[in-house]
Image 1: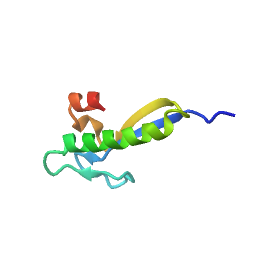
Image 2: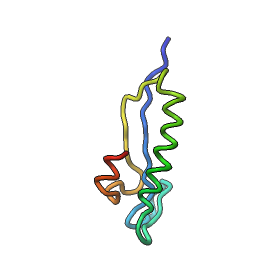
Image 3: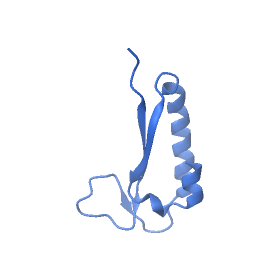
Image 4: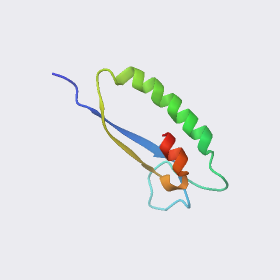
Length: 80
């Protein structure tokens, strides 16, 4: 029996402010977000994971969430 497809969750950990009810690992923006460095690290991590899982389990959905993904530029989200 084949394994079910995977769903990919990409976490953006910055918000305008930290809401008191939020359980996500998120942080209020104090200055510019380290967008480029975060995306580089994320893509490196995803590259390793895709080599491990993509052959046996296709990705059926991608969700970008967590903090406030719209804090990232359209170019950065496109890169992801």
